[in-house]
Amino acid sequence: MRRLWIIFSQTATICLAVLFVISTLKPEWLPSRAGLVPESMRVALVQQEVHPGTATGGARPDSYHDAVRKAAPSVVNIFTSKEVRVPRNPLLNDPVLRRFFGGQLGDETQRASSLGSGVIVSPAGYILTNHHVINAADEIEVATPDGKKLLAKVVGSDPDTDLAVLSVEAQNLPAITFGSSEKLRVGDIVLAIGNPLGIGQTVTSGIVSALDRTGLGINTFENFIQTDAAINQGNSGGALIDARGNLVGINSAILSQTGGSIGIGLAIPASMAKSVMEQIIKTGSVTRGWIGVELQPITPALADSFKLGTQEGAIINGVLNGGPADKAGVKPGDVLVAIDGKPIADAQSVLNSVIGMVPGSAAKMKLKRKGQDIELTVTVDRRPKPQARAE
Image (cartoon, rainbow, N blue to C red; front, side, top):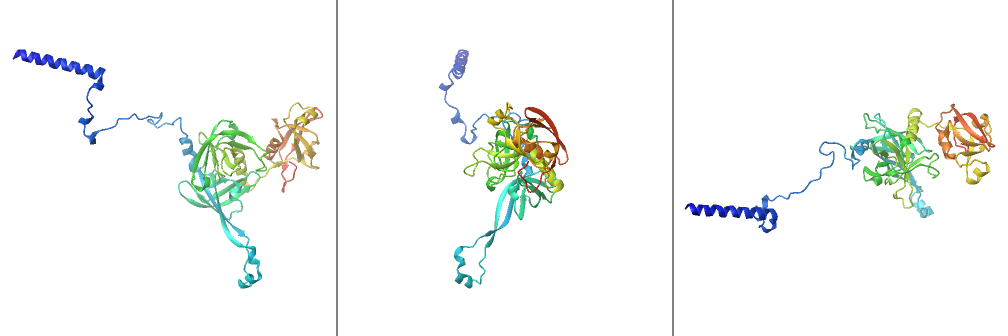
């Protein structure tokens, strides 16, 4: 009996050793155990990705969610309507028809509606948008992201920059935080938030494609931020924000041959929008500086003729008699190279500098006259209305 027990023990030990070796080196030789587990109890084991910051509730480096969450509550949808006259059909000029209808065949009146976007800039109910969004509207409704609908009235607008300020009867609204548009660089990440095509609040992303875009013929005063963040109809008046959720521009226009986004969107810098907004809220209109000169860009040929060595600056082509520049001694043919120590790049930069000055303030102008550097002090006046060609 003892001999049989020893044989059994040795056999079992050898079998376990063989099974261990096979399971370690050749597990595929062993039969599957899946069939031994009831189907209802089988579980598929998968590897789940853990994003940095997810476990601790921090920010994710691959997402702009925090920036959007900060700014999106401040971006509203704007719905406008107005009465428009629709010309009658010329066939209705027939005398027989006019007699039959009692002569009441005048033009029809219909209501036309449009949509856009806006940005809450004050908890007290001020909203910044584009002038063209609310132009000629007799009824304006604002819809907030949380579903509230409020009637709005126009505080004031400025067609020259395509900006307008609305007000609604509400308190403690989520106002956006203004960023520094002057610190934007080409290549910086930006996000556009608005109501494109009326489908509801939408966010698109891109980069700053260019800065200081002028000469596009869209506004009188242009200094656009160009971006490839998708901007479509209905985005006008919405927010262009940086990667931290701060407002850097008001989306205003697109360049497109089809009417849809092709990656060339234009936004008004937040610094310009803030200046216009503050004046409208304070006085209901915008007051701009004016010095009474006509400007001409410097071409390579003119740079050689004036012996400037550069195309930077602007040639004063004309001086308005009795205007601020004339009183200061500025003459036609002078080349303006700097205002208050700031170099002048071109004629548009002169305009942008002067319009931001307060009427009555003094501006030091550095000019070149017949090869000599001179400096004159001009007392800025109020820009006249209607606007003259002189800047």
